[in-house]
Every structure is written in structure tokens, then in C-alpha cells.
Image (cartoon, rainbow, N blue to C red):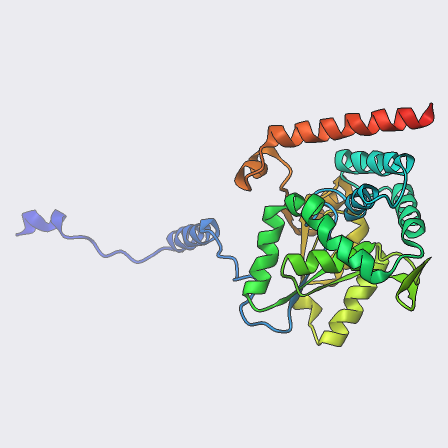
Length: 301
């Protein structure tokens, strides 16, 4: 039987080096295992909500410019004003960021255009304009993110510098809870051509979200916010779950530094996933830009 001793495993006590090797191996295995992300949004968390910027986050382009196109079709203003709207929209789509001068010009134009019109009239027209120019420009990817919050039983708000009447139409058509937007002054249901306060932009958005959260009893650390613009960093910084959607370069850098989550639905790969032909998108931008430039040059003659 002694000859078979070599078949019997020898019992050896673990040395310090072997213990260290074993622990190191276990630690390496643990670190290499994929970490499961906690469920988000959390089902049934009624103290959480989601806040979505509108322009270039939920919708391609700027809502105010699409609204201007609809008003032009209805003879609210002349061709030279449409040229300005077209030029601004083409620039916005190519640059992907908000130019303060362009946005201010657009707001001033819109206020002068709606002055003297009834609020109810603009709301009714807004429903038609949504179907004509906006519905097909909703990013499916962002829409899915909003729906996930709704499915979890949470409220979802648009937060935008666009007129609140337009924002409410879009929110309602998307099945969202509501909208925070720029408020134009009206007296007896008629627009005066002035704003109440200032446009809901940058820090003003953050203040609006903070005020709404207080009124709704929300815990901002459990809320989410989504935007494409570095101008909305104050709003994104308020919540526990900030997302950069189709981000401009400044927001992209900031999001990476802060380890925020990013989603980009503009690239060819992402466009294919959400059913938007990339080549068609490029062609549309190029065509729109050419038309805008032609109108702009004609205006300068």
C-alpha cells in the first residue's frame, strides 16, 4: 500500500504567501464581475420625478422656430421674418447649441407677433403646429426615457425657455405630466407683448425645478434631469440622477468630469437604433441650411 501513497493528496498548511495569492485572486474576480446597476427609475417612488429640457433634448431643433413656421403659414408675419427664423433654426441644428443672441431675437420676434392675439387662439393653433412640424421631430430615445419614468409611476415635466403655452401642448401630446416654460403677459386673455419676469433659461430653470419640487414634496436627490445644453448645468446639478442628452461640447466635458450618464441620439449608430436614417438626417440638415442661406442672402439684397 505504501507504493500507492503518491495517489493520496498530501495535507499542507497554507503559507502566508498562498493566503495572499488566494485573496488577491478573489479580489480580482470580484472586480472583474460586472456590477449590476440598481433599478432606475425606481418603481413606485412618488417622491421622485423627471425634468426634461425640450429643444434638442426631447425634440430636434427649437420649438420656438417650428412654432414660427406654423404662424407664418397662417399669415401672422411676412417672408422677411420667416428668413430670420429659418436662419436661426439652421444654425441651431448645425451647431447643436443655443446662441443667446439668436434666442433673444427669436423671443422678441415671437412676442411682437403674438401681441394682441388671444391666448386661446394660440393654444388652438399650437395643437395644429405640433402635428405639422413637431411630432416627427421627437427623439424616440428620449421619449422612451420619459416613458420609463411614467411607467414607474413618476411625474415627468418639460422645462424649457419656450413659451409655456407651446410647452404645455407638447407635454400633453406626449402624455407627460406638465410643463414649465416662459410666461408671456396677458390681460383678459390677450397677449400684451411683454414677458412676466424673464425667459426660463439657465439658472431660472433650476429655480423653477426647485420651486416645483418643494410644492410637490419631491426629494431632488431621487429625481432625474435631462438636457443637451451646458446652460442647464444648474438644473442638472440639482438632482441625484443627471443625464446629458445629445450634449454640446461643454456639457459633454462637464458630464464626463462629473461621471454623469450620457445619451446621444444624433450619431449614425444611435440613429439606426431609433429608426432615423442617418443619411436622410444629414440631407435634411443640408437642405434646410441651403434654403436658409438663400433666404438670408435674398433678404440682404
